[in-house]
Amino acid sequence: MLNKEIKFIWGKKNEKGKLDGLGITTYTNGERFIGIYKNGIRNGKGIYKYSDGTKYYGNWKNGKQCGFGKMLLTTNEYFECNWKNGKENGLVTYFYLDGSKSYSSWFLGQIIENHDSPREPWLHNLKNRFRKKRSKYKSNYDVDESSFFSKKSSKYVRKY
Image (cartoon, rainbow, N blue to C red; front, side):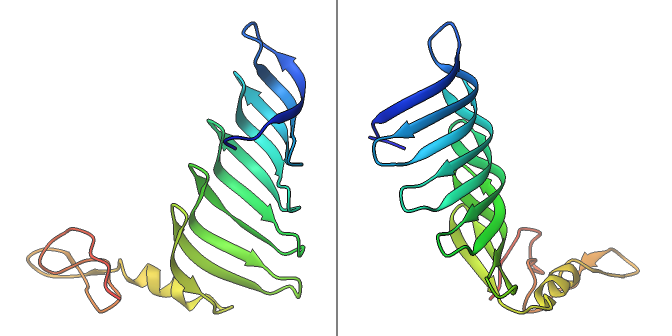
């Protein structure tokens, strides 16, 4: 968004002259945003069309992608995920043209783990990581090689 010249703006403006409510902004490089503005900044639902033809449909907060959104690629394949500060965050589901899907985990734009199985056994394993083991003295978490917990501390420890 930085250093893009605005070619066209349409929408209701507030007393400061900034877009407030539904608006359209077109840039000289061909990119365009149609959606909700608050005080001149993208806030709410909107569609952003990039110059290469890729489109983002989803929520915006403080001018960045935030919350649930869908990115439609120029190949007509797309992915859905939650966004935080303009970056993919959490489970990303990628939809291919042949109808198949793939899954991956992301944290603030960085891929953490790829999950290519269509049956999602990794999700079952994730649920089992947090099952409790019964003890007559105290309850502690069952630990194996794929666990998030260490026996020595209660801090999150990622083992791979």
